[in-house]
View 1 (cartoon, rainbow, N blue to C red):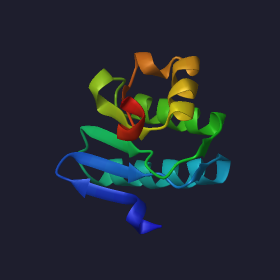
View 2 (cartoon, rainbow, N blue to C red):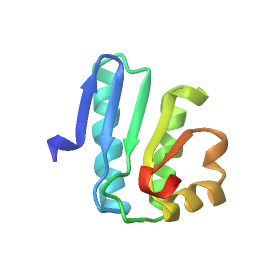
View 3 (cartoon, one colour):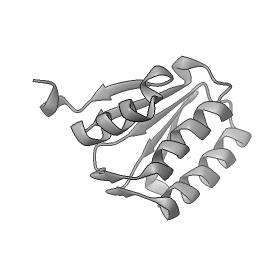
Length: 108
């Protein structure tokens, strides 16, 4: 699963899989913690391009990374978010803390 993580300068991009559930969030949490401890990271970008399902553990993952990054609004970004995931992020209140960019085909 190494292709899930891409480090460019101070930006870590995490490409999430089709289903973001408890086992996946544990893996992503451990790996991002390791990368953050080894490198200077200013922003984590979560790429939801392939994600069709996310449960509450995904919300917890994003909130936990927000806290790990020092609770700075510009430190976490969610990109290519589907309508379903966008709704979940808004219902959870995460939209107040992280930048969300909807998927291009759903913006029109």
